[in-house]
Figure 1 (spheres, rainbow, N blue to C red):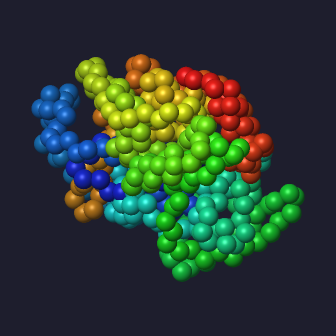
Figure 2: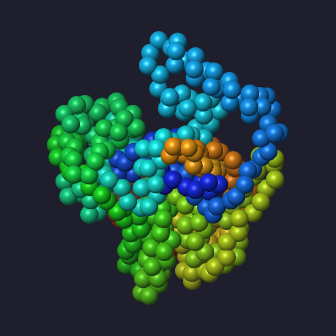
Figure 3: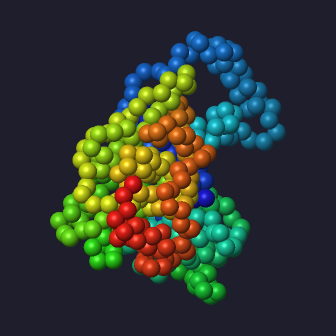
Length: 407
């Protein structure tokens, strides 16, 4: 499963949506971070729960005991103490992969990436389904990776001369990331042959929205992340398509790990005149609607999803499906249905905490279940994504539009 990179240090009380933990879903461009694709919505002030009502130790008892533990470990532990690891272990004790403490460097990377730019080479990677290695599943245009000749489907064999076979997704990303202006040597396997590329890292702005026509008169818009400014870029792409002869629209959110909730809601407003985008369920069981209103389009729409479509992508696809504004094609989505908020702490640390669950407009559970498409079509090979007729999911979407299929 691919792992999204985290992007921005949110302010206190902001809402976030995102997949698993660091590097367990989409890893964009070998950056260090979509730790779970936290997705930020409008700020909410105040505490959700009264600490006085928490069971067990009082706050003062907890603080005192934590200090005693720290003092004892620094004096008695047989190895050098790592305070960062101790802090992260404290949070990790909750057993929730989405509740996480980011140190200042991780928080800075998070902030940079949510701004829509990062330092890297410009690819999306995933664990290969064919071999015990990491595979490049997308190469962004205008990036160092494209200029070096890397292609979707390349298997990463070695990094700086050392074997990368069998390494975890996180380890590969950490080995490839680095400062702007520095280089990394990647040896990739392609069609049974090994080729080495020397690639210079630089600051890259991700082309998160790409549009064109397929099969003549069918608009196609790919959205790779719900990062900052995506909704505006999408609206421009949609407007350009509507100015021409168009028989239908395909929106591709495959391999999209998520993004800002408000960007997702803005995108939905192009298709949902008045409806519910999702429901949030609080710890006490209270369920509240999040509504959206806007306009519609006069042509059939299909949304493409796969197992790497997560969080905000699942919100978007589910809202389009259950508001009956689009047909969904592909494979069952990732299944990330929990909501986090983040808080800035002392010394540049940022704490993300799972505070809510979200449900689809029809109150279906996404967490661990994912969203089932209306038409299940097996995933094509990564090297054929976006190409007709090889991309069988896109081909089925075109077929449905030509048939005049409506949700």
